[in-house]
Image 1 (tube, rainbow, N blue to C red):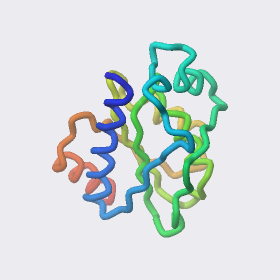
Image 2: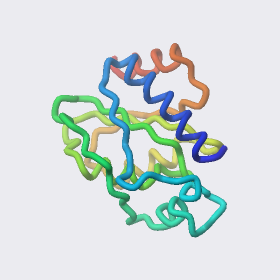
Image 3: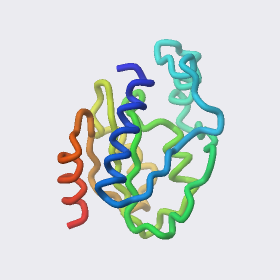
Image 4: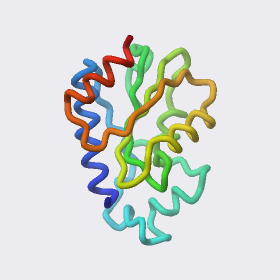
Length: 153
């Protein structure tokens, strides 16, 4: 699935997660927006390919999440790139104070499961309190409602 289509699917899932949890939607955006050429995963010199090839890459955020301190649980959603979370997810986690918070991942993907993305982020940020995430490809509002309800029990 093209990365741009994944991003649209991810935005829809994020809106539903925010709606059913009563949460605030914050869109993780790079300071320099991605172009179609940047997202061409077939091109090894595209911006997304270069970022994903470098585990230390941390794209700059367009803004910082406000009021993280007000939340006990934070859902972080992303489209899976190269079987991982995009590097900007690392930037987001490193830019905020997630201590004492429960962090739950959700993702969309053209062919990967969430397992490796989750495993790598949990390994990198082992000090955070993680709950099992979910791949939300094609999930309905009711599916997401049930999943998030189970997270709050």
